[in-house]
Amino acid sequence: MGDHALPGRPPVPLTLRRSARARRISLRISQLDGRVTLTYPHGLPEVDALNFARTKEEWIRKHLQDRPEPATVQFGQIIPVEGVDRRIVRAQGRRIQLQDDEIAVPQGAEARRLARFLKELARDRLTGACDDYAAMLGRPYSSLTIRDTRSRWGSCSSAGGLMFSWRLILAPSEILHYVAAHEVAHLAEMNHSAAFWAQVERIFGDYKTQRRWLRDNGAQLHQYRFDAPVS
Image (cartoon, rainbow, N blue to C red):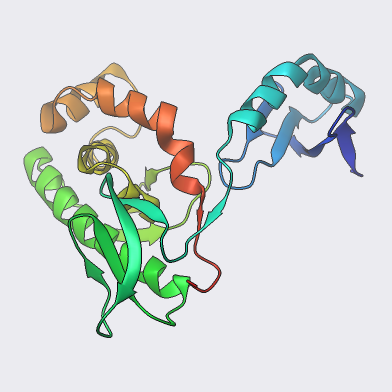
């Protein structure tokens, strides 16, 4: 479809995407890399989609400005683990150690090793939470996978497979538990109807504070980069 951008300083690149399923024009800004995607229905002229983006320029630029700057993890940096700020320090031994206000990483280890540690911690916490909520719901799940997703914190397939973003381990524990309960509730209601939210409340309790926290703070969990050595 060619390269497109909103003019200005700086110009904002736009990714245009036609969709047979789209019924209207929609805009999405990636929490991970700030990519602006404009999705529009087949049959709608491309120029109409671009004009729509121009009417939303102020909204787009505000969201890009508010997006947290990427931060490559390194010794001395503070990152949240289960919502608790912990400074990355050099470990004395060869194992990563999670302490009250520090996370000790062996000297010379790559940040990817720290990411693997956090992914396994996320898997452990999410498995425990999902086991509990599935038992309360009376509906077993078939599998649980951990990924680094851009657009969603979790999902539930029609076959009962649960998927979660491992970055939930950076959020406070009650946020991770809310997302676990949310996806487990889909085992009973594959929708977002009133009946679904009643199931969430039944197994988790009042979820409004946690849902609002994710909406207001979730983008911050994507700012940490683990693709370079800790140095």
